[in-house]
Length: 72
Image (cartoon, rainbow, N blue to C red; front, side, top):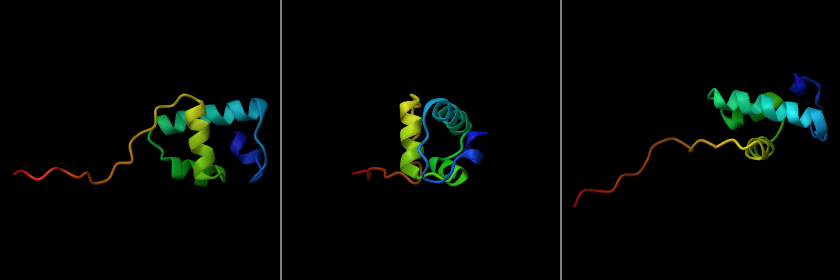
């Protein structure tokens, strides 16, 4: 896989970038979080987020507790 051969901070271009984007897209679609993908690849959250959006992935909401309006 491309992640193992990439050095931290190295530019990712061409075929390597396309392969990495495809791998990230596939894993994200199975439920893996952006933070987990960033840790796994040794890249920043922002890099992974950008790769996913460039690939046309519809990002999930943040989750967690939601606020509800009080009944009057």
